[in-house]
Structures are given as structure tokens and as C-alpha cells.
Image (cartoon, rainbow, N blue to C red; front, side):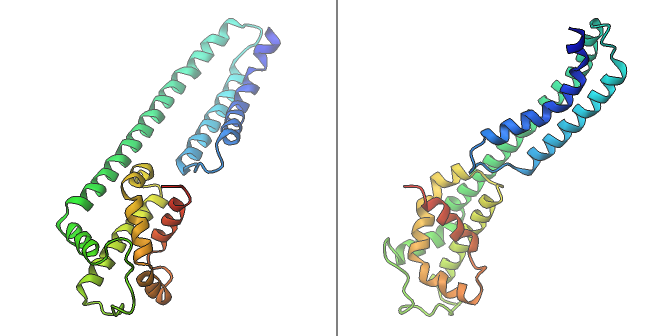
Length: 217
């Protein structure tokens, strides 16, 4: 028993590595591990190594009764840190969902967004495609093309936010997946026209459409 308790400081130092390895191996390959999780892991490892070093210096394995006193000193701050992490994660998730809802509501309530959406839907009922033969794509004064450009710019902004994990992808996908798919099909000639001038045009929008298009509607 004494030998077991005496080896505890060494084991404590290896716990973060073991737990981190198990989580990494168990996580599906498609799961994106955000940067702050690595920060959590580094802080946990530093705290564990520090506590293990202090425990090795202070704890006398010949007096097992002291172990629970030192364990309590470790568990108290640990529970506080875990509570802070959980609270932080809940706040981040709620903030991300609220931001996503605001963006969705803006699309359906903002006067400019509604006008552009109606103009595109009226001129291009699905599955009609915007043909280069009917419009001069370089005419930046054309009302329909201006509405098309604003629609694409708005969804490209949303796509950039999704790809950088700043908004809730699942919620946005449920609302806008079909709209984005239709836009990328119907407006493809216009998109390709401008992308020949600069490949950065609506790059994130096309990347998101490709990602969402891999799953059945």
C-alpha cells in the first residue's frame, strides 16, 4: 500500500497524457478539435506536473493518512477549473447559436435582403440558370446582377463564418442548405465569370456548398 501511494505523484503527471491520448484516438476523424481545447490540455498538463512535483517533495508515503489531505488540496482547484471550463463552453455555444439565429433572421427580415431574395427568385425560378447570353456579367449597374452579387456576398460571408467555426453550422445548414445549393447551380455561370478574374470570389461559398453537397438532402 505504501509503495502504491508513493508512486501516485508519478502517475498524476501521466494522467493528462493518457486522457488526451484516449480522447484523440476515440474522436471521429472528421471532428475538428478547436484551438482552445489544446490550451485546456496544456494547462491541465502543466497543473498536473506542478502538483506532482510538489506532492513528491511534500508527501511522505510512510504516512498514508496525509495523502487525503494533499489530494483534497488538488481536487478543490481542479473542480473549480472544470466548472470554469464547462461554463465557458456553454457560454461559447449559446453565443454561437444566438449569433447564427440573428444572421438567419436578418436574411428573412432585412429590407435589402428580402428585396434581393425576391428579385433573384422572380427572375430565376428554380431550376433556371443565369445565362451569360441574356446578361452582360460585367454590367455592374444591372439591378438583377447587383442583387445576385449581394446574395452571393452574403452567403459567402456566412460560409466563411461556418468554415472558421464562428457560427452554428448544423443550424445554418438546416435553414440555408437548399438555398445555397440552388444559388451555386443557378448562378454558376456568373460565379465562374468573376472567378476567372479573381479565384478568391465566393471561394468559401463554393467550398461550403461542396461540403454540404456530399450528404443527401
